[in-house]
Amino acid sequence: AQKITQTQPGMFVQEKEAVTLDCTYDTSDPSYGLFWYKQPSSGEMIFLIYQGSYDQQNATEGRYSLNFQKARKSANLVISASQLGDSAMYFCAMREGGPRYNNNDMRFGAGTRLTVKP
Amino acid sequence: GAVVSQHPSRVICKSGTSVKIECRSLDFQATTMFWYRQFPKKSLMLMATSNEGSKATYEQGVEKDKFLINHASLTLSTLTVTSAHPEDSSFYICSAREGGSGGSYEQYFGPGTRLTVT
Image (cartoon, rainbow over all chains, first blue to last red):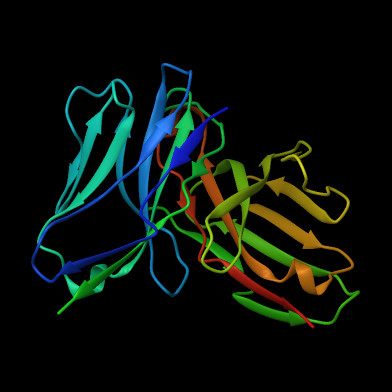
């Protein structure tokens, strides 16, 4: 069974600074995908970044980057140059199986509430 | 990116009544849709996975007779909460993936439906 762990219930960061949100996972499937989502107070789930288990390089999307350490089974999200609008809940998620043609479900970690201070 | 809509966004119903929540993929065909439930300040918990034209697969502990899921077309899935009770009050989120050769790793989420049972 897959398991996603986010150990930081809450994090604070000063505006314009970088912050790392931790995520570790556990799976016996060699093929899997890792996702980060942002959930503002409105409730919508906003996709941020994706990392495939066979991807050689760490994923990056604008100010978001994923520090993927496969041996440690960690997939930390790094947000650079934090903005006030980054304040939200952040969820790490994993789906086992290959990235395509895959109808497996996605499982979520407990989430980390990030607060950006002005 | 692809858009998934949910209707209604908020609903208040009386205990004992049934409520239907619709989830639509607006610009793609979703062979698989997922229904999640989220309690306040908690993570998303998968309730069930539905594939178009077949019966939904429910997670352990989710009553299939209480949470009826119908995935009648490639763009529509419905969740009906039957004989609702106050403990069914929650935030329900649907998610959809485009399957087949056009599928990708991304899973698109609806904006959620907040159900309050009085």
